[in-house]
Image 1 (cartoon, rainbow, N blue to C red):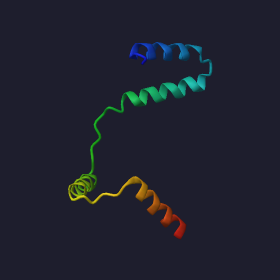
Image 2: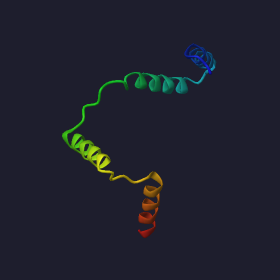
Image 3: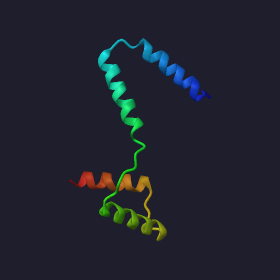
Image 4: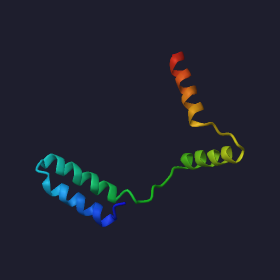
Length: 80
């Protein structure tokens, strides 16, 4: 498995080979935005309430599998 240092060096080599200015600007924007994505997100009261309701559903066993949800969604879409 590659170490962080190996991955970093590989990326640097690849970036140095890129000549497309637009691509490099887009890459810079992507890297810059991901570096600030560690900031805390303030939730609204409504979001906090929804999360609390979800926790209660989990505690009470009110769960549905992803497969069952996909099937339910397909049935709903086909009924339209």
